[in-house]
Image (cartoon, rainbow, N blue to C red; front, side, top):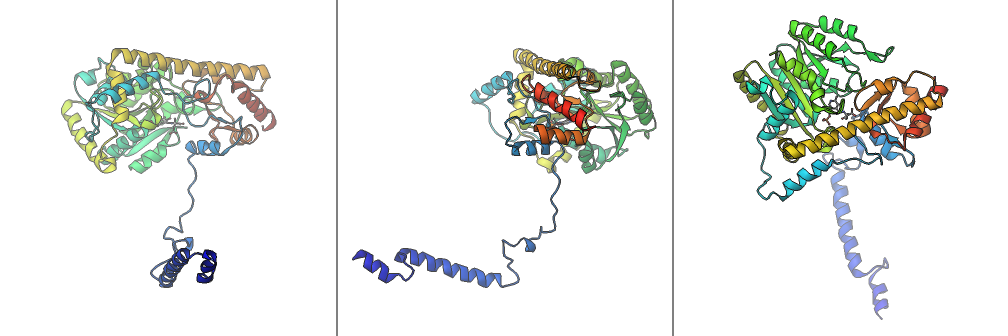
Length: 452
Ligand code: PLA
């Protein structure tokens, strides 16, 4: 009976309830059709009518895009040596033990709130960051002629510094080393500076082109801004010696060139935070002015927390105060004020003697593991009799080896061996482990013997 009334009430073979839903839907469709025939309402599915239809697809980032390609590769042997991110011997990302401890303390402290930070960030974090890079007994701190503002990691600190200079400094040209971190020219151009390069690396010697560097800085216009990698130059792994730094300092001060240090790897070069800060301290000690952008991404493993600081050293406290007031006017319309969590972790570690010591031990362990990867890769290539002099692998400093492999060889290694790296031949040694060294050495050997 029931089934009979069901079929008699519905010509479509559906229940009365679903018939009603269909007729409501049909009314919507009629209404929408009526609307879409009007020229004012474009169909939302037609890309031809999008106001963004003319937009071309942008290229992937040359560094972060390597990770995008790596993530798409299903191969079990794939290896990501693109981005400079530390991995353990097991190939896993590492959260430092001391960071876990600090986070635990923060979570258990019920007095902590999530209110906005001031525009310049966490006061403790700023003071401690200045102490970390300039040294506890630094005259610039003692004389209070420095302003330090918390920014969004190293990149954000460079950008805020760049915008400040573009607005308030008399020289708007910044010289960056050739080569340099691929984001530098973009950051400074968008900040409003005009970007030029100075010679830095000599591919023939795989070392510093010191003469070229001195000539180029010597012919830069007086007052020009000079970007210097504080240590562990990215991508080359080649740093000036202390004597060369001293010559660079003298030349720059004699021409009133403005140093802008990028310190993204403090502690990663030598394993010592103080030693890696020497170039910055050398410039700070002479009483001149300078900028420094600090990042805690690598040395505290806080990559995604985006923790960094910009310091501007001035001639006296009064100028420093006015500079800070202008930095606030750069930051407020950009992102208002910085995030609280990462800076609180850093401050907790830097202000507690025990946590600080623990951090230095973990940092040294990371630096040492990278150095041992250099040795293992060098030995593996020697064992294979790979043509060429590979001693630069053990000579270069910091997170990266600038292998000298060309873009075709890199493409070959990615295609045949699923090894991902930037097309300039840079490999992140921190992404390597004892297990993956033989695979990488096989790939390099094949690339240089087959793709000359
Ligand atoms: N400066 C230099 C010289 C760098 O190498 C990096 C990061 C930064 C600044 C910015 O770091 P941050 O904003 O994360 O603090 N370079 C990485 C990552 C590690 C990247 O390209 O973003 C690299 O693989 O080169």
